[in-house]
Every structure is written in C-alpha cells, then in structure tokens.
Length: 228
Image 1: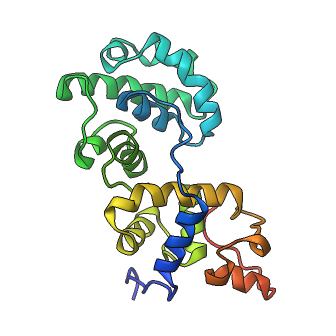
Image 2: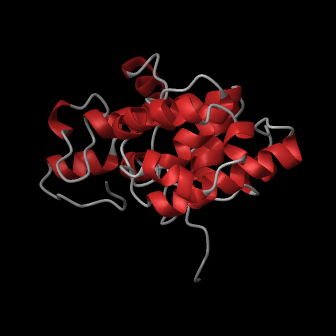
C-alpha cells in the first residue's frame, strides 16, 4: 500500500546503541557557540555548509551582532557580507534578520525551548530545531542530517526515505534522554567510518551487527539512501 509504514529491520538495536556509546562516549556538536542564540544562528548557517567553515564565519558575525536584539536592527544586506562564504548566504541572511526580529517581538530576545515555536522562525526546520533543543537546552531532540540519515538506514536502526521517517524510527529505538547523544554518535560514525561512498566496513566495530556491512563483506556492495 502506498505510504504504508514498513516494519523496522530486525537488528539487535540495544546492543548496537550500547556499542555506539562505547565507541563515542563523549561527543557533542562541532559548532562553536556560547549562547542559544549563537547556536541557532550557527545551525541555520550550517545547512549545505561544513561546521568548520561555519566556525570560521561566526566569530566575525557575532562580533557585530552578538544578540537577537543587535541583529534585529540589521537587514539582509548587512548580514550578507559577513556570511558570504556559506552556501545559500543570501537566503540565510534574510532568514536570520527576520528570525532575530521575531525573537525580539515574541520571545523578549531569547530563543524558545519548544519545537513549535522554533519551527515558526524563518529558515528553521526540524533538524535545526532539534539541534537547538538538544545542544542549547539539554532537551530531547534528535536531528536527522545527511550523516544520521545514511548511517541509521545502513545500520538498520531506521528504515526511511525521508528525515521525518528516520527521526520517528530512531525515537522508537532510543529513550528520549539519549536522543541528543545518539544524533552525535551517528554523525561521528558517518564522518569517521561509515562514509557515503566508501564505508570502512572491514574495520568497523559494528560490522557483526550491521545488515549492510555484512552484505558488503559478502560482496553485495549495496548503496544505502542518503549521502554527503
């Protein structure tokens, strides 16, 4: 039936989550920030842009616009030169200027701690909102970026063709208090081991538990959904 929810793969999810925790015990976001506003801005900038480049751009941006109140008085044309190294910088400049104004008007300059209020901000989708909830406030949030999408499908922790499906499946397999850490562990596993084109399956500690890894080692070489 079109649109029907497929069952999750039969994997030893608990054992896999435990092994991921042992492999990446203390991981966090690579984005540098000091306040929830800085993290919100940095996460918006990180779309189609590396965290390393965002970390190079944000110090100059925050030196001029350190708060929502400061940025609320800026127009997109003021922000563009400061973020021009980031992809899609013109649309991001418009979104950031509008978001700063809404933060001042609706939230007293602070960043809201509720998903619905974050999603009402220009340029903020579920991935960005979940990143802010988990990393700025320590609240349950499981952001699905390209690494999480790819690795979760390959490991069999999720079966989805959209980020929303993968997020829902991962939430079912992991307690809410661990969502943020799972997000980071899957990201780092994708960066260090489970690469988009040439995953390092032979040396992966998850190989005995990974459906696609076992298939690759048998010569299947199947590509999973998602990529960098």
